[in-house]
Length: 87
Image (cartoon, rainbow, N blue to C red):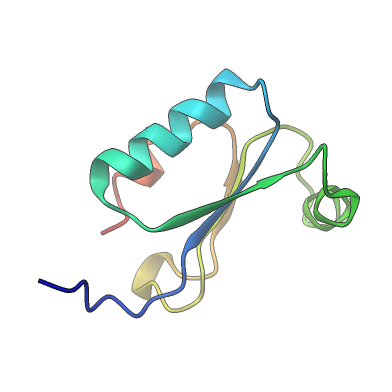
């Protein structure tokens, strides 16, 4: 059966050797949430973007606006409490 979920993917801005980044991606995988990882080390524009949002630690999770009540939210760090709110 095809996945009919047309929502955009959650974006995880992280660092390559970051344990919290890996834990965040694992949690999203376990929940079956579509996500995209963007390396802050390889993409300076992404690092500038998250800094402008006020974040100083990785990972930074950005939830697209089409995710209902969670849409448009962003946070930094491994936050299983917030990840559990995603469907």
